[in-house]
Image (cartoon, rainbow, N blue to C red):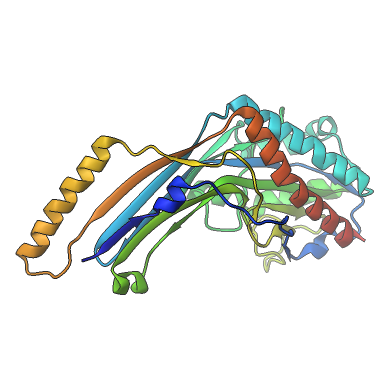
Amino acid sequence: MRTVIVSLFALLLPFAGPAQAQSVALGSDNATALKGARRVAIDQFGVEFITVLRAAGTGGGASAAVEAELRGVSDQAMQALADQAYKDTVAALVTAGFEVVPQEELQAWPEYRELAAKMGQPSPYVIDDTGSVSKIYAPTGMKAFFQSSGGRGSLNDRMTAFNGAYGAQASALAKTMNIHFVRFHFLAGFGTANASKGFLSNIAGRANASVDPGPTLFAQETQAQVVSQEGQRMFRTSSRGGVNGSIYLDKPYRIQAPGFDLVDTTTAESKQSDNVSNAISMGIGLLVGSRSARSTRHASAAVNLTDAQFSETYLRLISPVRDAMVERVQAEAR
């Protein structure tokens, strides 16, 4: 009989993080683009909060799906956190010895306003992916911008973010202003989703979908992208289109925090429907002489946080990663 697992332990138990603080692991992609940077501008800044996580697993004809939601956190709290994260980032860059162009000065350049109108969206900018739903918050007064290392977002999101022509315009403006643009993006979630797929799952006859709760910054997507004055080349020096280089989180970063308990919110109707569909599938399987039954399980869950819990936890999550990225920016600029 095929097995369906919608990770009960992950749904019902609180996140148990590591006993000691996790170290921040960074990677880079042509970070030498920062060489000689002294005066910088943050032309794009976003904190992207995952509000829904989805996982769907298959194996041996069975399927399992789980959807978890972040509840209780207001849009005002998310906006306030993005504003604070931006202020803290500017302060960290100044402490590191950089001159940071004020937003008012950057906004005064018509070339920047034109580029922001092409690439940006009103904040919050909602990203609805197969595996998650998220909201990108920009500092008050700025547009929100999508950033990715590759596979996330819609085709339009990616085409806009990786557009070489827009990158060339940004490089030209950087040259005119005699600056480097540094674009910070933090992808923050309340957990991670996992699911079974592929040959081994079929052999094992197991379908598994789970959500492991806990405050997390995601690797590759949490990054500081760089636009230098060198322009965009046909054979890019960075694998990320539209920019000249990047410093990124190389491994997911997690911290311990109270309140990240997944509560099972699966409705009675959904549970009953699954039982009925499984019984029907089992009947069909037996009728055609199969030794296995096709089955499906769906579950839903939620993490409930107050605005205060959210703000304290996510600022504590972001701070060490931001400081590590700024330290690396400083080192590469020498």
